[in-house]
Image 1: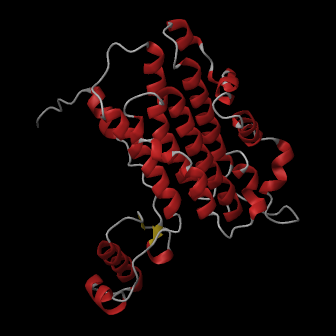
Image 2: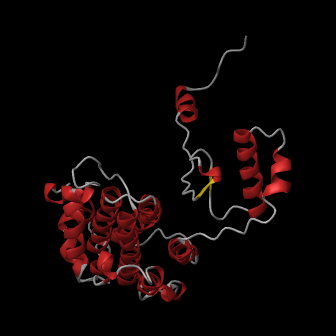
Length: 284
């Protein structure tokens, strides 16, 4: 028997390997057991669906189900395509900006701190979108509030070349700096804090029945609000980036994003009750 030469660290890496961050949309068979990303190949989606149906209905051949019952199924179009594309386009544009010039080793420390905070925000926004799409409310608000703090810190330190400023600046105390970039940031931070701190005065929002017999974990009305915050955060992200890099030669790579989130907000929520998230739209 060969000795296992794997190091303890390698064992940990295997045991706690990261799962992919997948925001699935298509619930194959409506059973909540198998889900697919909305951008998956249409033919693959049908074949996976056929396999699930065959398994649960007792068919011996998934190919039979595929050919007999799924030939006329239309290509799936994501209901949230506008907001999905917006998140991808913002992240892609900023990535192109950073790849447009070689790594820098002589920039002031504040810019490095800004870049670190800003680049980290991309994955946080993806997570914000994922929880919002699932119809949660408190959880997306927690992420959005954290992102506002992150952006506030980035603005506060970006022009500094002093270590003390970079390492001792507190994000939650830098909201006033962010308000110089977006005047509504303070109000947005306050609104998000009401839910992030689990304000007991808002408990009624999570009661599903008048007799209090049901607790709402997630619902479509929560989704309307949470997705509104995604658009606001995207708009704020661009404003923060413009504040630091508007004079950079490569800024033109992201310039088209200006006003994009507000326009997408209006398109995405067209026809939805305005009173549900109009307060977010007013923050832009």
